Length: 193
Image 1 (cartoon, rainbow, N blue to C red):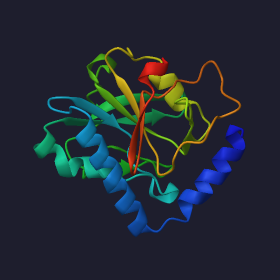
Image 2 (image 1 turned 45 degrees about the vertical axis):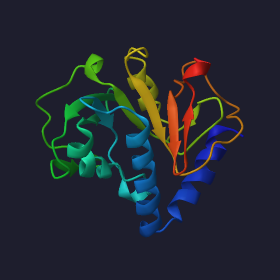
Image 3 (image 1 turned 120 degrees about the vertical axis):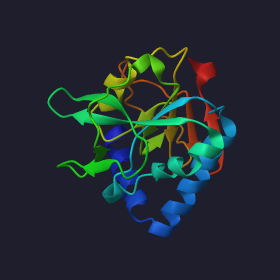
Image 4 (image 1 turned 180 degrees about the vertical axis):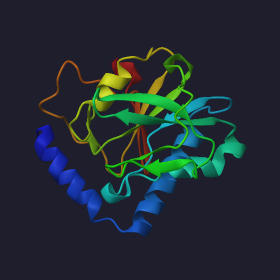
């Protein structure tokens, strides 16, 4: 199936989930991440959830900072350049919604170097068994991920759904995931790179 069709199908599937179901599945996904990866003294750059799109609640990362001893960072999107920049985020109250209702950090003074990030947590609608993903179609994350050293930084997708067999219209510019986490499994794609 092609990305355009997959986008429609999986956004629709996500939008029918109740708030209670989103919270339960999000909690399962975040716990799997924290129990699977070594996060001690690591820097995690995570997307912040867009409520209107029923995204995975990554604010849950803040509930476990002291227990797992990591630092949280997030991104801010520059619509003109279609680029993401990384900023520190000390707590979930330090955000505002931009004109597109995307949560962003209030503090945009301190930009963090890409080379300092250990994990990038990536939003997506669906992924396939090869580690390819379908997002919202603007290519923002592909441009962003190209800047990282894959030997240092792991790209981790979060998804409510199990993978499909294959995304048919994959492009050479598409960046594959290192891992993807669903509510009951961690998929490892590193051996495929």
